[in-house]
Length: 214
Image (cartoon, rainbow, N blue to C red; front, side, top):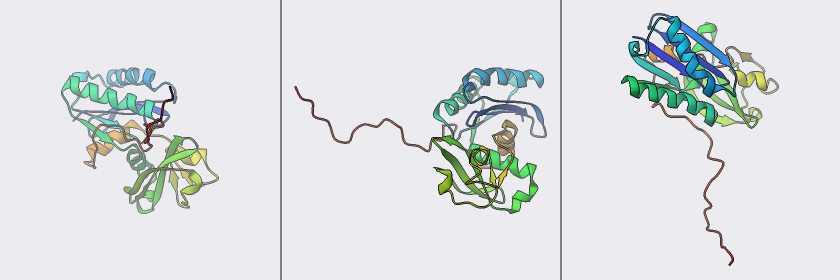
């Protein structure tokens, strides 16, 4: 089964294609302001390196966040559009789960150790979730690093940004598309391909109508 996977929920734009046994091609770039410019060329690049056409794909896996609104929307909309055009299923993966899976692969010792994944939520906050044996047991949520009150290992860019509050940082910093694909290929729980937003909109309708003076 050929899976095209990508994620735009972190500062990294990451794309990979996998056949279920191995990653055939993978590409990533860390540039938080250019997700919309980089994703489509990244997809073209990995398909070309794997000598594949879009019509060869069997499914798409996309990281659905949590993440910033604009960058996250780029990935999810692209995945849904490709899935509709190609007539193939689109699987959503919590980006924090993909990072956790990748972390356990890099450091098998984490499989038996509770740890937190923390990514940059901007506004001096982090998106976070807690894992035991690599499985999510709490979260995702958004919080100020000082309010997380966690002394164990922390995977992700949040630990790089706030080492004074999250001192036990571990790799990887950002999501990798290969881990998004691996999550789906392993039969782990997936989500609908819709953005996972954890904040309320900044602009809301007033609850009490305002009086207008003539």
